[in-house]
Image (cartoon, rainbow, N blue to C red; front, top):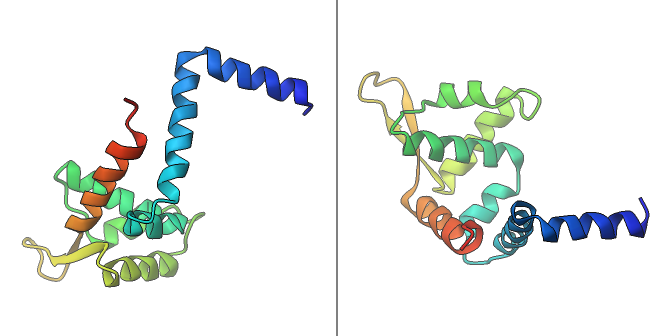
Length: 134
């Protein structure tokens, strides 16, 4: 790809308001990656499996749906992580208090996984400060 092609693509991004918003989003996303205040967010981003599990837990928490350990492990695509890697990652996230294990009220043998308050606060700050287009 030559410089002329890159210049043309860049000009298209800056002319189109949707693409310009994408450019701003990309810049803010990068800023979020290097923001030292967001230690949990950045830890989660270091690994695809961590990111998928964490976002899945946040998503279901916001929908007021319970996610058991087994549900989470089954949801992680096998092409991204094996069952053992997903379990290991989930345990690490719980050990670092990014996610929390709670005993299920309906089935005492199962554990529900929830995002920690600190993680939710960091993701909220990350979205408001870095991602939301103002």
